[in-house]
Structures are given as structure tokens and as C-alpha cells.
Amino acid sequence: MKTLIKLAFVVGLGMLVVKAMEAKKEWTGLSETEIRAKLGDKLGDKVPKDRLQEISDKVVQGMKAKGRLAEDSSPEADGAGA
Image 1 (cartoon, rainbow, N blue to C red):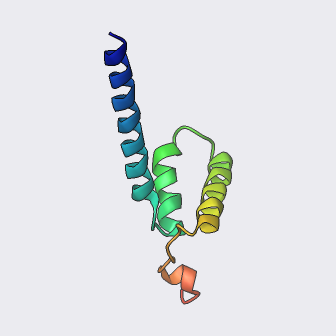
Image 2: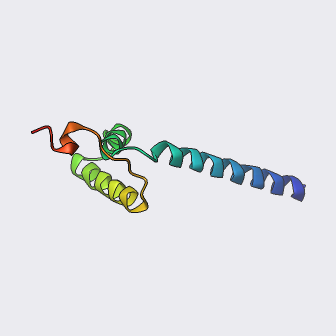
Image 3: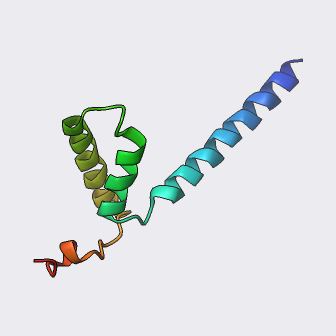
């Protein structure tokens, strides 16, 4: 019985690790605009706009620090939009 419980625990832990790696891969390589849009879709109706802006800023800042942020290729980011 103990072996079965240990096995279930190890399998569950393995599933959590795989799920976390998939989520990390999903967010890696997104541009700043894409990250903000994705956060807006996920959290937009759950948090106030000012709080959403703070969260977005911190997420973008953290991803920049870790080197997981892709360059933003929109005309606004290039300065050509004005």
C-alpha cells in the first residue's frame, strides 16, 4: 500500500513538472505586446485596469531580465508609427 501511494505521488509530481514546462514554453518568446494582450485576456475581467497594468509591467520586466522576451516587431515599437 505504501508503495502504491509513493508511486501515485511521483506520477503526480511528474505531471506537474510537465505542465509547468509546457506553460513556460507557451510564454517564452512572446513580444511585450503579446504578453500584455495575453495577460489582459486572462486577467482583464478579474482585476482593475490599474492593477492589471502593474502586473503586466512586472511580468514584462521579469521576462526581460531572464531573456525570455522577443523583440516587439510592431511599428509602434520601432518608432515608425509616428
